[in-house]
Image (tube, rainbow over all chains, first blue to last red; front, side):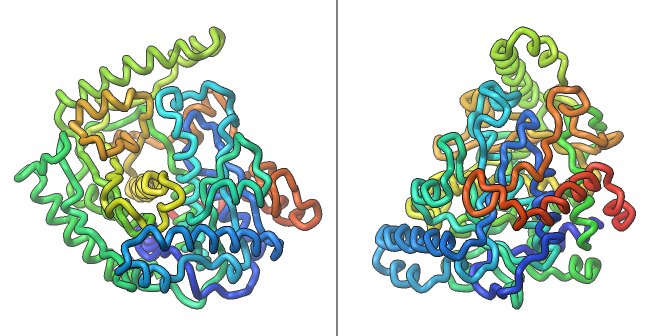
Length: 239
Length: 239
């Protein structure tokens, strides 16, 4: 069981291409949404809703909104990266058989929510936990997921007719895929590499490496990161 | 493999009590942090850091900050809920052998980040995905996790000496537990119940139920939510 969970986590990908047109059966989609619904939420408010987008006309409008925002985005990069940016594949809105907007209802449990009193963003964080649950369940089902974030929020709100209290947290493209890539697309494209995990861990206060107290842990982190990339132990046990 | 992932998702809990004092071995902690590090991130920026808190003096200061914020929080509830609120157990800061602050470095990949151009919060969302990966891996390892959010951010910043660009996204309590509860604590305490998932799904635009087009899906959602609560099929296959 443990190995299966790690295998799913390490082989999960953010999919932009290679979507197949086959629809996701209701039975599978239902399991994915149930996985999302069993995410943790602040004050048990369960602030999420799931807006399925299947209508080709609506997908087309969302795609147009992406193209508009993406043209704006390209101009924000320095000239040397701009060409590379424009060659990257950043969405599969039209190819994926299902688009899914995961939203957060900021009023779902009244104005005062247990645990949200000191950090108003906790409801949105809960919604992101639901997205990640769905993403992992999808990987275990062989369904690819891509999170598209290059939109003006107002465009999405307008197209999907979201009331003001509803925040569109994630716009996802879902579908079966011809394959899952070994590595993140952006790493394979040379955009940015994976960071060494052992350098991202501190002890007791920011910047404190812990020296001897964390030496054993860091050795483990180096080995586990290497193995996660190679998926060796995990995939043998899980498949 | 699929069943193991669902079992983990459906039996994951937000743990506040029942922590055992046993330390988490480096080998286990390393696997949990590696799971977190393999979360998706916008522009592959990997904005997270992991600040382990083991020093009892620092845990004590964090606990004091919680008590202060929690007293403020109680006053925000109407009188009839206030007493109930005060009786809820909302943290395990001192009992859990390890506290972990998961942070987001907003400058990790420079000022212009691919995919963060139109939603500045995408880096924080990525960090939440890392938290949820860690949470599920912990459940698969038999390690309990509780997310404590009742703090003034300035207090956490001060105690953990976080630079201004670093956002404390999640403060987690981790440890082995004597048992995992069947239901969320807040549901068991009568604070708030689980919502019917089939009422949270729309088709193509907000408020549109889809009628016949989603009737089969809704039937599946009702059944899957029932089974997830009972953990029947999943636990038989996974353990």
